[in-house]
Image (cartoon, rainbow, N blue to C red; front, side):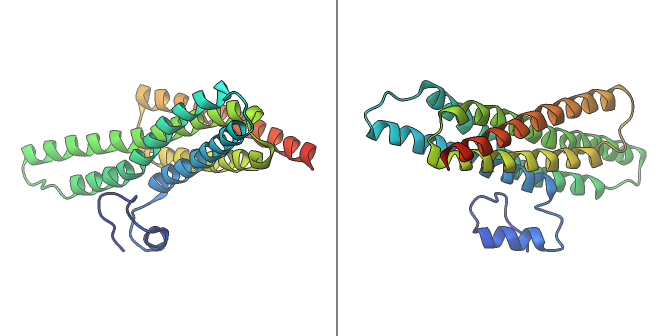
Length: 217
């Protein structure tokens, strides 16, 4: 099943069917970004419910939650764009492989197109990983101020974001295979940093979420 340029106008069933088909897109990179957007969405929902409950109780809006809302909306928007960008990047790579290579000029043009496609294929999952970490930072900021009835949603969002982060990094890993030298070392260092930061954040959020649930039991 082939989907048009944006995945966001389709039903969940269409997306699931397309992901489960033998077509290469949407693949790991775009599904990682999509999952991250939903993880951020759960944290946004918990923050909005918490602010609404505080307003109903006549309390002053929590500045930590209102600040997190703005940042989370930006990060979620970035993840939405990356969901489609990953599909476009793969199509660009396929197009590059189909370029003619009869003459030396055509071969040079094809190599240049493949280089650009490879660069984009590495950039998109790395951006997704960074966005997931940024969303996890906001989830960590939100959790202490979240209403007890929806703390589990912050934890669930963090769990989705951690999975999305790892999925994005695996997509990056496979696109690093044929890259050598300083550029590979630079991207590998960034990959290691985002992985470590994301794991630390997610583990802390999940631990604190379980503790908050236990206190409310």
